[in-house]
Length: 271
Image (cartoon, rainbow, N blue to C red; front, side, top):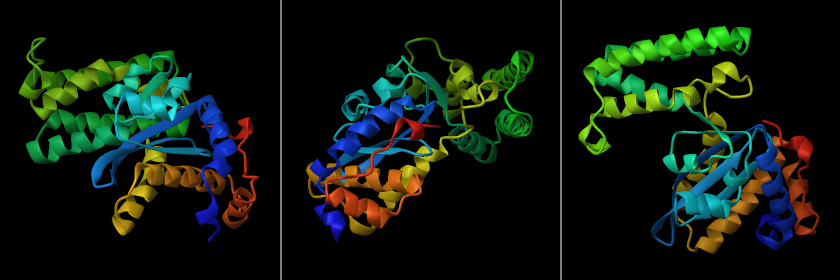
């Protein structure tokens, strides 16, 4: 198949353009997941938009891996993720958190532990989401009112789960208390979707983009070498980007094999 001949060298120009274009997007979605390489745990990273996808494989999960991928450090607008703390090491951009992750955690606390405040906060976030979908981003007055309501519900939870003194550590706290720490410390990041219409409610874009490679791993097993995983990531970055931009994948592969791969432009660096 042509894909087998599509070496990383033939996709160098595409990869360079991708590394330049993804950070230009108003919103970049980030995610990471475990990847088995040569029998050991490695990490698959993705940085994507609605029109661009950049995958990378690395032995590490944190800042070192993100720096090697070369995307997050170049972003200057919004990045959306699930609160993996190393992302916050990059402070040149604005951070928005995935509310779908929060809803899952709140659902567990309500259904398994009977935490009423968790149900109330879940309902409140969903009501905010519906209002923004219907009427657009909140103005300053509306946002302040929403923030006040959000903090009031969080305080109800805090009465049951007080924050431990500095130095006692998260491991000594309950799951509810740890979640409340995040809800209070990152309320602006959680509610960013209300006051900036560019910011989505969830990080579904990155989760969808990473799911295909996870399915591939379940079917085909691990990669034998890190080099093989990196080659696969570059080819999949190319195919995913071409698919998002409505290009014929067979023709795109032929072009890459012939040394003239499709090159995304700045016009396609949208959210």
